[in-house]
Length: 415
Image 1 (cartoon, one colour):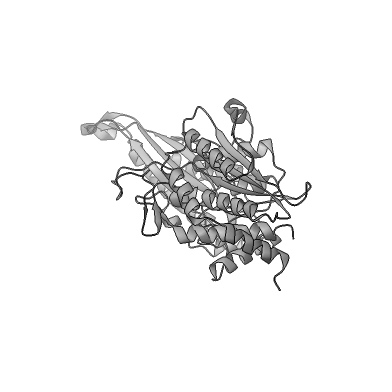
Image 2: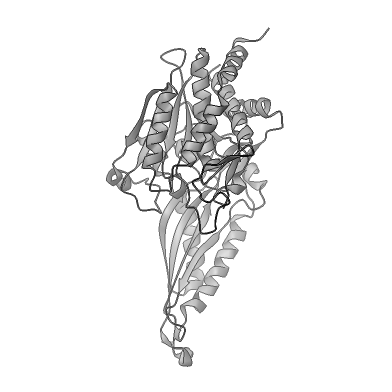
């Protein structure tokens, strides 16, 4: 005979509406929401949550000036004039039920310059069992799955022992200001699950990353008499080599076993270089921008200090480093803890495959929740390799499997 949680799960799965899920995801993907311009998609998400019958579904606006003055401000890389999130709640069986957060970001990267197969990054085309468009896999599918899971649980009429707060947040791509703001307002969560694309593995450790801008100063001269000047480009070359040596250093003796299992746990990368202004002049300035890792157990300040020392050792006083853009702390939730086990079991049943506890190299909103002492994991669809790429898409069956996983998580939490 089925146990009560199994009966509740079966009832929710019977109530799940795949067509409505796809329609919701299509509408979200069809609404452009590049980081810094998330207002339209947030208002749409609030309407979707209200139609799903969730309590208090609405947008929340935040005071940017106050957030930027906070000493723990996580950094920003995009101009914005507003910051909007969405909150909505599914009540639990009792008023004092523990609250589980399901948090999904709805901001996305730009469409790029290469043509998309369906004509636009915002087409939301549904074809051959996939939804196509920017943000489909990263991570509007995660929000649609979470919303559909809560709607199915509500319509099945069997409340879970936990309450669930659905959070749609802005600004994840450039530092996580949306999640940061939401938690300053309310951090009363017993745990959090973030449905980022993970191939259904349970991510319980994430590296951090700090973004830097460096300026190399040279001495201008005519190119025909270049030895009378000092090229900023030439002075940059040993800096680049020093950063490569730093990468080797921080990837030696990696303590965290999940991070150690990765091919390159802590990458150091320079992503942009600009130098000189005339072919016949010795350049007197070069600017470079990149990111350095924050190891598990390391603070952002310690990570910055390593970069500053590496650059200073070869820069001969000609290089200035500033810390710009997103500043992602590292974070972890114990791999042998109850949340990892619960989510792993739910994903195993839903997928019928082995699910592992793993680590991720990228910075995410996970670290904001962990900073408040909230156990947090990530679990979502396959397809991370298509995120930020041309012709991004997500497989509908994978989104439905994620929805089932989240239904199982909600009904298991607090049991």
